[in-house]
Length: 404
Image (cartoon, rainbow, N blue to C red; front, top):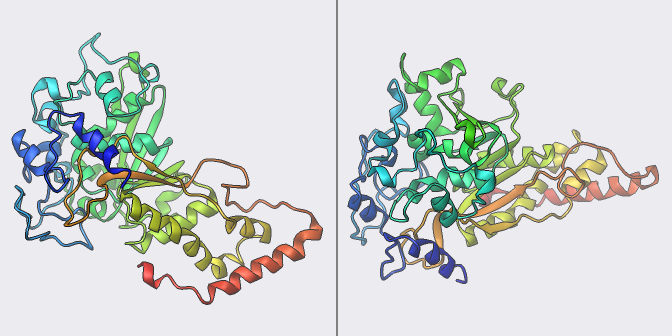
């Protein structure tokens, strides 16, 4: 409960930061107030409707005793539908707000923000100040996606499981503004991405992905560092897998995911194992701190369950290092979407992109590395092998069925 005041403080700094009697934020009501609540035709704000936060494994009908303004679900809605057309939306067509409320990507000469490295952008207040936006702007209700990636990211980034984010690809240009003198490659993977690419027709933006071309590019003004962003969609498979042919010469510097639900989808187990073994930085966000804690507690069990598979593929010291105790920091995300979600009687903080989890960091030392390097004196080999055998033995009584 100690995080409730922090979540509310983020919301209260905005003029539109209304808190209902039950502690939730009337997200759809605020969008309706600004005239941006709806399905197709509402630019970056487009939504499939209903109360489901994701495409699968959720109740699309939502709570029936809640009478807040809500858009009804639209059958056949496709995240990223705009990419089935021949061009991206511009600032005005995407945001559909007054000009003064839009965080622009196209600047008049001399009107660019200061280079980000001099601005110390660490939270919503500093970002709004850097972008010269009034807090009246509801931009934070969308920008929490790209700014959370900024909070988590590296350079060649694989973004897993995007859905609504596909409706707002140009917003990720903010990364090029925030990271001067950097070239960023962002590749998106997931069911929604796969479905979108399969629907792509000749001449559409999404069709570029079938030729392995970026579906969106952006170059920051030279006065802001001249960074570039290239967004790719992986449409060959629904899931991320390092064995895919397209991964050749394209292994990521980091993997990120928003509102991941690591225990809700079996596909995460392979990602978790790969990143631990290869030492690839991997970070995600979760709605609730309690959910993040449950997932962190399950990570050693996921690794332990892989021991029989890894025993013949890694040397003993590397395997023992992989299974050594480690910490998975959970942090309050300053770039979370303002406002508590409505999820029945829950009053603990539950916010889109609310909390970050660092699954694997970018340290290359023994504590965080999971590679197959060899260390230790020969005399210790027997002891190490014995410990590995003990770990393998423990896995026989373990199951991940309860986590699926």
